Amino acid sequence: MKKLLLLCIVILATGCEYLSNGVAENSKFPKFKKNTIEFKNNTILLTSGYTKTTSEEFKKRVNLLEDKAKFKTVALQELEKIEKKKVDYEIFVHEDNVENYIFVYACDFYKLDEHRAARVVASLNDQLKDESNNQKVKYKRIHGRYFFTPTSKVVKLKYLKAYKTKKKFQTEYIVASKNGGIGLSISNVEDVDFENSIKRLAVK
Image (tube, rainbow, N blue to C red; front, top):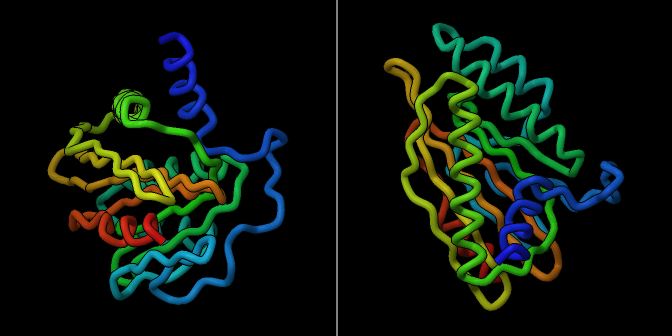
């Protein structure tokens, strides 16, 4: 049991980091096409309107949000959290609404069985609840689940963040395979989480 708990703590503490020295090796991401995320010969299809952007452009667009100071701060904190992982990452943002964005980042393969995956979901839920408390926003877990395929293992946690009358849906994925892994952090005000696209990636 101690070993099991230690494994879950290590997974969450590393945040899917794959290099001990904090420096990314050769990029794991090929050139991206509009409305798709390509990773290790797999593709995640996005809805129309999503395009790849840079960190600086994302910050500029977020800072233009009016009457949403709280979620502006939250979005910038989420980007900072991704940047601190010191791994390959990409940002996709909807052209019409910067509040709909996706962070995609490289991470390691973790050997998860059903029991361990459930513990990871529970621990991630606790971590994000504490994060929301620090951000002074309300947190509500929608669901946590995991699904395994012959080639990949996927952990998913979907939750809601709310402040006064504003709210947004967020989803965290860890997709692990023997050839490597990919993490996704999805923020969307229209409750879109791309689960079907993630499942198609996982079975290829």
